[in-house]
Length: 190
Image 1 (cartoon, rainbow, N blue to C red):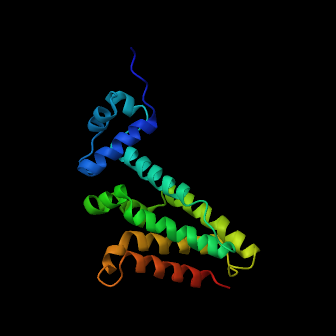
Image 2: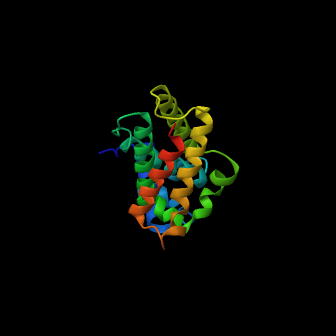
Image 3: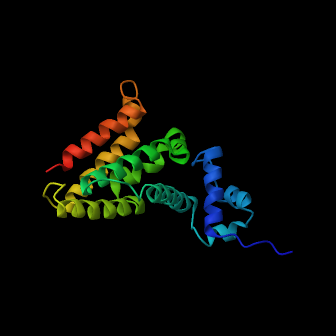
């Protein structure tokens, strides 16, 4: 019986398993191919190198979190935006893949923190800008350029997610989430 053809999603799932088991730096395309049950050329047909594969893996992971938080409640645009942003940040903080990367290979994120926006960040910016525009339309978000407000929200959320361990001596997870919510709401309030 012929073997079922593996999709890129199957290969990404294998890559996720490898990162969780070994860390990003020790994950190889050979190991991913073995775990996915495909040949190395099959993996190379989708990704030129392990760095590109890992970038797609992180994007896929964060897109999944974003999809889970897409339907949030709120009385107005500001409340919906703050609720979604905080739920997303809270989910990323405890996401097993992101925890593993921060524990073992934080340098993998350096290009996206200091040099350029990644696909995930650009997608988040688009969602934030739309949400800011919606909140401005209903009067719940202060005036200002939506793209500027969205960028500051991204920087704030990203800092909370990536640097939360610096404050765990004074802020536990629940307190961090509450304070982030207050911070974002206060920034956006008219």
